[in-house]
Amino acid sequence: MIENPRPDQSVSDHARLMLEVAIDQLVQPGHVHVERQAPDGTARNELAEVLPLLDQVAEAVHPGSERTGKSVHGSRPPASLAPLALVSEIRGVVRQACRGHDHDQPGELRERLALWARHAEQWQLTAFDYLAWAADRATEWVREARLLLDPPPRFPLHGKACPMCRATAVQVWSDDENDYLRRPALSIDPERVEAVCAACDARWGMDVWGQLAAAIDQQHRETLTVTEITASAGEKS
Image (cartoon, rainbow, N blue to C red; front, side, top):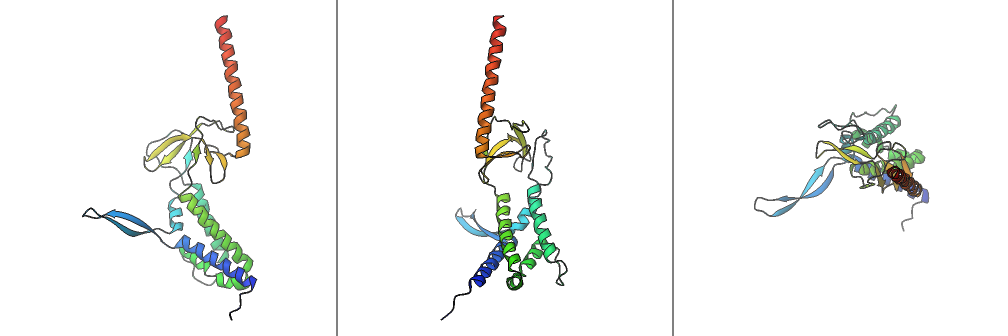
């Protein structure tokens, strides 16, 4: 009869598996099914290889940011900070963990990350706390990478001015148009359940935003009322 593994062994096995699965998602090429039209007019389903997730994030560094200045046709935006921050964090973790090791240090980040994960067997025996942290961190890297590459759609708040910077619109880069497009500054981020200003990056929880928006609308109505009264008084005089 096979004995069940000890709880601590089971936990460490799970952590190692989590790490290996996450690293595979980051460094291994992906595959997607695409439908192609054959010369005879029939549709054919093919399996296509896509870049590893980490390489896609590295490519997303340019372009992908927002700005509020005047649009200049064909002028590409600066480096996108979110993908850059994720790549930098991964590079820093790997560099620190492998510092002083006598194995080769590959130049490609993807190869270095895979090499870092191969220490999991040793961590499982001698450094479980680090293994558990690495598994959680790598899983979070995958989540962040997928959100960067395919973010959930935000719901724009048309006609609303940011309470902090007063911006009502921003210029957002479009790869399709090869130019900046005008978009509302305020939107609802469904991932974080927040109201977000794309101009100044201010954020409010939905409960706070609800109260703030109500106060702003009330102030706007009072301003309109005062304006109408003033205009009416001017006409009578």
